[in-house]
Image 1: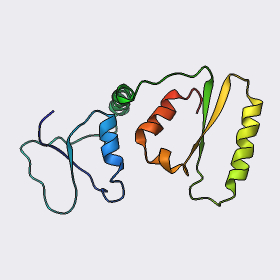
Image 2 (image 1 turned 90 degrees about the vertical axis):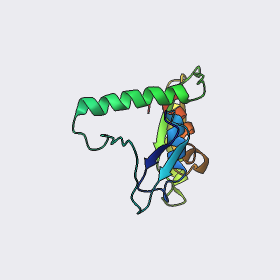
Image 3 (image 1 turned 120 degrees about the horizontal axis):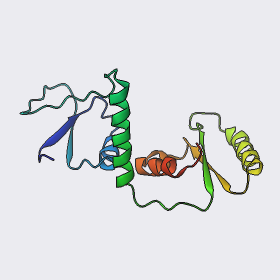
Length: 146
């Protein structure tokens, strides 16, 4: 990779922690983030097609390659003897008493599944998990059922 590698992003202020974690996961190092109004000049510019390409094959290929890079950059993942059921719970912006329903649902689900399944909540209110992109990727990678 070139020594002076920069990526222009449009929303640095709201996602300043997100970008470096993402670049680490896909194996990009020593990235300079560029944002703001002044024009940027470079000897070479690469314009990505993600998000603007209407080619399903190209978009699928990008996802496959990205997934392989992320999995390769995660720490070794040990598989549990149980099958993991990851339940996504969006509770960060909800009423404070929703945990009562969520906990009841998780218990009922856990009780209703065979013993080989372990129910794991993935909560949007889990600030530690939401701040760690590698942790999120690991949770989804190790899950057998989402």
